[in-house]
Each structure stands twice: as C-alpha cells, then as structure tokens.
Image (cartoon, rainbow, N blue to C red; front, side, top):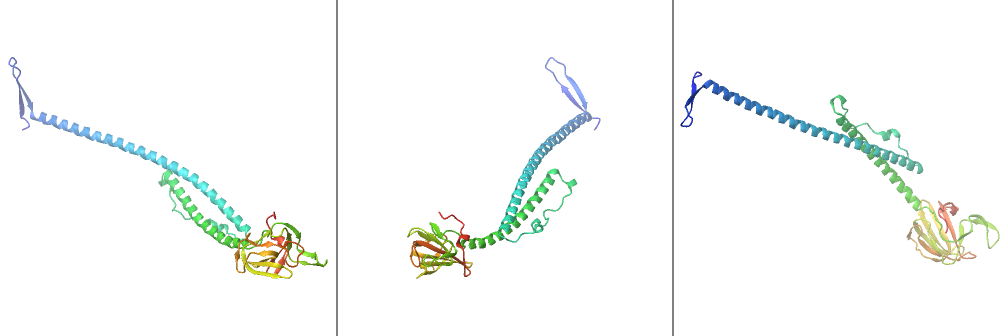
Length: 301
C-alpha cells in the first residue's frame, strides 16, 4: 500500500497535450500530516500567547488593585492616628473632670487593657500590603476596645455628675431680689433699740412690690405671718438647705408647691419688725444660719 501511487491527468484545452502526474500515496499522507501538525502547533502556540497576554493583563490589574488597597490602608492609618489623638484628648478631659469633682481616678494600667487583636504574622510569608492590613486591623481592634472602656468610664462620670448637678440645682446661689444691700450678716445694731444683736440674714432694700425669687430649686414648706418677720416664706431645698424670705407685702406661693431657681414667690414689703420696704433673706443649713452672700454667685443687678 505504501508503494501505491495516485495518478492525476492534466488535460489542457483542445490544442494542448495531455499530461499524467503520479504522486506516491505516502507523500500525500505526509503532506496532510505535516499540515495538520502545523495547524495544531499554530493553534497551540496562539492559545499560549493569548493566555499569557490575559494572565499579564490580570496581573497588572491585580497589581493596580493592590496599590490602591495599600494607599487606602495608608490613609486609614492616618485617620486612625487622628482618632487616637482625639481619644487621648477625651481621656485627658475625663481625668480633669474627675479631679474637679473629686471623683475616683482610673489607674493607668486599667486604661491600657489587654493586647488582644489578631494573631501574629510571619512577615516573610506575606506582602507589604497584607502586613499593613494586619497592622491596621490590630490598631482598629485596640481603639475599639479602648473606646468601649472610655465610654463606660464616661458613663460613670455622668452618673456622678448627675448627683452633683442635682445638688447644685438645690443649693442657694443667686440674689433673691434686686436692690441694694442695706444690712449685712452678723452682729449689727438694732434700728429700734440701738443695741447690737445677731442679724442672721441680709437685708436688701428696694421699692414695695419688687419681685422676690427663690434662690434654688426646692419645695415651699412654710407660708406664715408673725410679729418679727411679717409675711414670710420658707423653702426647703434638700441636702440640708433651707431659705427664708421675710417682710413680704404679698406671698405668691403655697405650702407644698415645688419651685425652681429664679421663680417668683412673693413681693417685697415692710411687714413685721421693719423700718421700710426690704427683704430679709436667710440661708439655713442643717439647722445653722450662714452668711447668704457666701453662696451668691451672680451680680445683684
């Protein structure tokens, strides 16, 4: 079969001479096989070439994406540094607040908390971006735990200050009326007898009908009239504090009424043991009389 030949007849036009061409069958098979091999090799090499091109494109895309991620992580680290600075500022303010209001301090060791966070990485096995991501994750984790701790401590401070605020709201701290100080606290001459006697409050003079206000939040416990104080009101502020407002021309509060600092409770007058329109104002704490001016924080007018 290998020695067989294929004969081709070449017949030209009517004027030409016919020719006969014999080609061994083996040669034909060889040519066909060679063409097939060339086609296969061509397709194979082309696929490798295009595959390499695709891989290279994907690699470039991955490199670009990796670079973008690195830039984002770098920006995150800057932001984290700023957050940490703000956290430190908050801690400093918390410490000042605790010092100002005599609240217990937090030990520095307690503020550090544990190390925690993700496990340690072997730098030789990971890229720079992966190491940056790990470091950023560690910082985020640490700041989250610190922020939770600080939030808890601020809640403690807030709770303590709520008690302080309530106490301040119920501490007499403003002038009870407008006018001028006509008589102070202490041993003073009695205008009727001329002898010195203990004056347990202060006298503030002004026109009859000048509004009288309570100097702190509290509850009205007395609205009475007697020979010495004339018409007067007593307010219980809690925390051991009471205030008394005497010589009123008119009372505008009732026993049991809750009042706020600055609320009008009466009008200035000259009732009782008095030489003219004024307010006699007393501050009593735990049954003892104190100089009211030591508690006044604002200006009279």
